[in-house]
Structure formats: C-alpha cells, structure tokens
Image (cartoon, rainbow, N blue to C red):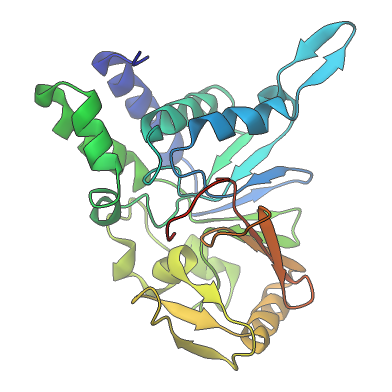
Length: 265
C-alpha cells in the first residue's frame, strides 16, 4: 500500500528545500560517519543498512539511524521501484536530524536523467494524474539545492562522481551556486557528479563510456589530493560487486549500496 498522501509529500519537500537551501555546496563534518553509496530506489536495502547499526542498551534497541552520522553519496532514485520511499525517508530524517544526515546530490538527482530512468514513471504510476507532474517537479526542485561534496574530518573528500581539473581549491566547490538546475552548465559540478577513475591512465581523458565528463588517472588523483590536503576520496557512481572497491593503493574508495543491481549507473 502506498504510504504517502500528496499533501504530506508536498510538506516534506517544502521543508527539505528549506533545510538544503541553508547548506553550502561543500559541507564540513567531523568524523566518524557512516558513508552510504548509491541506493537507486532500493528501499529495503536502506532499511537494512539502518538496522545493521541498531544497538542494544539496557534491554532496549536504539535504532541505527539515531546512533551515527550518515553521509549519503547520491543516486537515491531511478532503476529501483521505490525511489519515492527512499527520498521521503531520507528527507524526513534530514529535516528532523539535519546535522546527522548529509545527503549529497548524485547525477540521477537531475530531471534530465530521472525523467528517463525511472523516477518519472514511478511518480506517474503512484500519484493521481492531477498531482504527478507537480510531485516530479517539486522533487527535482529540491534536488537543485542539495550539496555536491563533503569533507569528513578534514582529510576525507566525499562526492558522488569524482575529481576535476577545475578543482584547484576547496573554495572552487564552495563557489558553485545553488540552486543548480543543470549541473552540466558548470564544469566542476558536472565532474563532481559524473567523473570516474581509470586504472593506468595518465592525467585526464574524455569519459567516452558515459559520453559526459572525464576519466582521471592515478597521477591526477594524487596531485589533486595533495593540493587539497586530503588523504582519501570516497565516491559512488560505479557498481562494486562487493559493495566497495579501492583504487590507487587505497587513495580512492568507491561505495555502492544497492546489492543485486544490474544496470549502468
């Protein structure tokens, strides 16, 4: 049974937009934190992740979502069939516990993408025809206010996609304006959402697999990390069979949190 009414969804989206609009494009947070990769509408896996952090104290179970700070790397929607549940739960937690839930934007949190890969179809199917277009538009409006990166403990940089030749200082991320309707209009924003590492590559190369953004090699990664003063880059965007994959002697970590996923990211 569908758990949300139109007016409830509107209220959550309105409140979430207010929270996100107050955040900078680059967030800073203290360690430790739980980092979660792409979910792609797999609501049961989001619940499983939270449940894995439940704690028993004095005979009571403390829910996992309250016990830790979480950083989500984006791509909440599309592919799976419960994108709305994923977004609504995370947005409600963000509203209730804004400092414990950092929700970064992924490349699928853009209308040009999610109208093709599942969110639009799900919203049309699950809402009244008089309401579905408004819900879809409001979702994507909220997405335009979401941050693009987070620095964890001063030494770990988190984003959905990857680094960029346009990333010279942290201030370059801060300077990206919000709301950002189309990330492809800003080279740095596009790469933060879309770029991929490539083993053995020297420098940078066009990302001809995705047809957008860049591949970056080990040397480009190391140079960028040294310039920013960070020790690790954590990102999502690519499927990892075991849920995670290291690159370049553990300087970069890809996290993917949608088990059983079989489509391209």
